[in-house]
Image 1: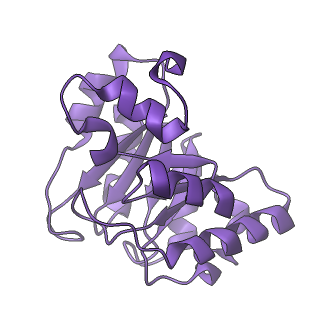
Image 2 (image 1 turned 45 degrees about the horizontal axis):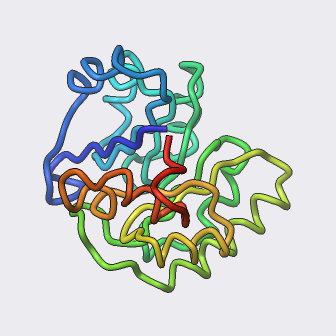
Length: 193
């Protein structure tokens, strides 16, 4: 997947790309677009991001007035829906919408800026969410975003995550991307495809 952070300068203090950039990127890859909307209100823009090429849209529970309705709207377009949990958001927020989600994104930093340090308390949340997913019987991606590096990546996988988002750890040092990705995977650069 290609994880795309969309920020509005309102829900989070930073401002990033919108649907037109996603639409321009879509023809250049076969990888699914995992679009993380850090915007509020989120509901009025869902259709635009679907039309731009999102394969998964992940929203924050407090970014719209009715989380269940938002998740249903996303799925009504025939794509996958996700829910993002900021560090202070309890894992129980998923309990009544678990049948409507395909991805749970654990934010292991406060959203809005790259390069932050991993918040270790989120490992317990990952473990809790993994148990909830297993109990539900659903095939839900458990993704972690924020402060992911070779050390924290291993901790996240051990806690139950099966997808990791890495930005700063990948893009540090021009020309070393393959080595950086390999380090995240725990192997030599020759294993990177």
